[in-house]
Length: 159
Figure 1 (cartoon, rainbow, N blue to C red):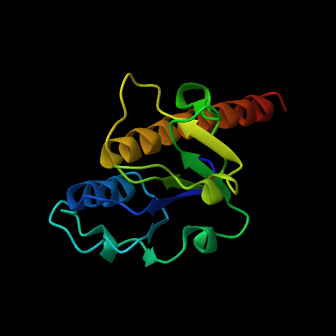
Figure 2 (tube, rainbow, N blue to C red):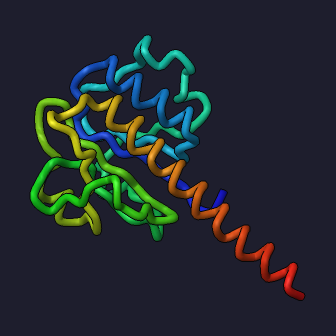
């Protein structure tokens, strides 16, 4: 796999099952951190892997929690959003997801270099969206690493 990491930011998540599902997705796909802004979080039974014990789970203002030299990427249905199907993930990305019953606030969107959306007929719930995005990142970054390794192997073989 290529170098870099993914971190997840959840803005004012509404439902406990979706937060637990998002934490489980972060654990399954190797996210480096989960940050939560808003007071609606507590430990939930849907985090069956107790992800908070294995990856950092921090609370605070998402814009203050973006790791150094990391690209903030909003995951949002809006006119500025690029489809996830063609989006090249940055090596270091902080993906920010809005609440199930609202949007990523404009002050956060303004600080995001990129905005992506999962092209669906209807909006998805938070946990499903986190799963799809992290899976897409894994697939694309794995392909990228295989391509780079193949190029390097061909270069070595030609010596």
